[in-house]
Length: 348
Image (tube, rainbow, N blue to C red; front, side, top):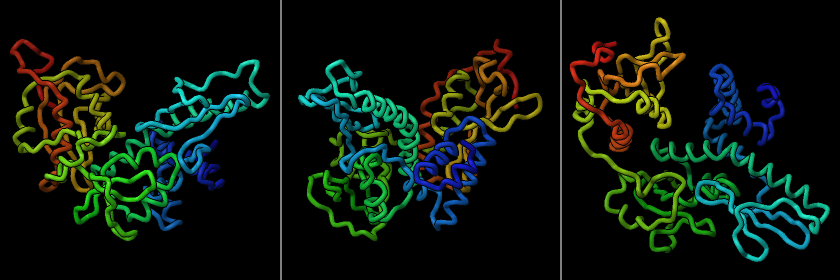
């Protein structure tokens, strides 16, 4: 279905598809076109593009508790989701199952349609899982702000988003930490109610700024992304970046940074790419320059890279931004360069 057609339809489902295209399509031109449409629609609704995204998450046919039942007649199966939106199935006997089974001869006439609904649910969940988890992890890193009423209405009150957003630790901007109870209310690490008003601004808490409060949340259940158990780095950023320069690493390790938001620069002459960039905020970008770099058509053409220069633009980093940058750089294993490695003798 064309992008303009999705825009014209205008339903939450259609806009949800448009949002997914804007975030994950492999074709840059179409992805940019979808992103422009999302921003235009959001502006018309007096929303930010992220606020619009919160409102168009598909409910996948789930009930208010975030579950659905597949009725086979004499037997039924209850489906819900775990902390990373994997489907969890329980039979009518209360026993867990790996999946909803195919209908048998003794099942009702409607069982086949129920099984088709189950397979559709699996496909639809696969289509939103990764993007949703990534979105809320980025919200933690960027300290995106919501009012409590927005969180309740569009996240905690949503049958799918609930499974993700009820698991992290949240914080008011004045430092009151809480999570959401099964009833959707803010509670502290001791399970007692926390007084947070609907108009209060809240964020997904980042461990780099939680201080001593972090310790009281260490027994949180499994989370959709690393939060309370997330590694926090407090070393001097400039020193750590400089320590990488002039050393070698594998091309695969540098390319793996793409999973953390790093992108290769636009191709230069003959398709060469010698820089990896990661936007930290609107004014700050982290940069890794490498030699011999990457060929746009064959990024792994060279197995190893010399790290020539690592730096960031802009002003001094916040504690969260510094920790996140060092967390990324900690994934790079480096070695000294021997004198007999001609592929690494040079600079961009």
